[in-house]
Length: 258
Image 1 (tube, rainbow, N blue to C red):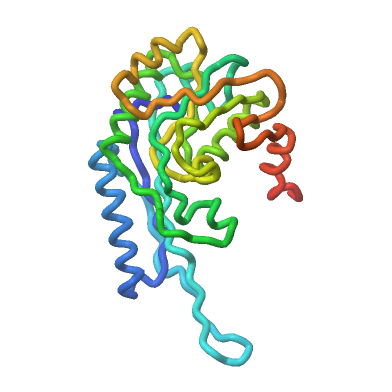
Image 2: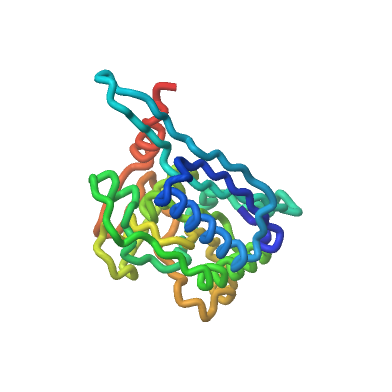
């Protein structure tokens, strides 16, 4: 969004179940250890938060047998920061036809527990592993590019990976995109839907290309993957072509009755 990493603070919201059970308590401990390590690495302090434990229902089924239903263990981390000038805020939507599309960060075969696997009824084992040292380096370089006004739009990839990120940018800008993922040495579906962490999808005006790439000189995971195009389709070379209207309809469908 454009906040300086040095001006970022965090809040944690923990919603857990049965934390008196060894397995659940162990999961909670590992989760807290992880966010502690990340906060120290990124130098982003936790300033507040809340927790809700023992989110369990205990009752009986129609035959009188005991029933226990537990909420899934959930950890939500929110961030808050200061942007001195609102004109420097970075939005999701691409700004102009001809702008270049870059993928920052490495895409690995990490579809385990992803939205894509879940949609196909699979969990998998290759869950994403976060390299906080590499990510921090990327975030600092990204912050420098933001300060130099070189970023036209940005989106941090998460659920659904690159495929969903590209779709969201196309929907937000109502602009076509021509994309080539030939640099990603993975099977097509994994290149699109891997949920490797730390990646950022950005657009850059052509006149800023040289300055932008100079900021990231020496960073090995900077890839120009296409451009914002005339027309109303998201075109991923040798993989798919879909109209923005269809993407828009699919995105809004879950809440279509409200």
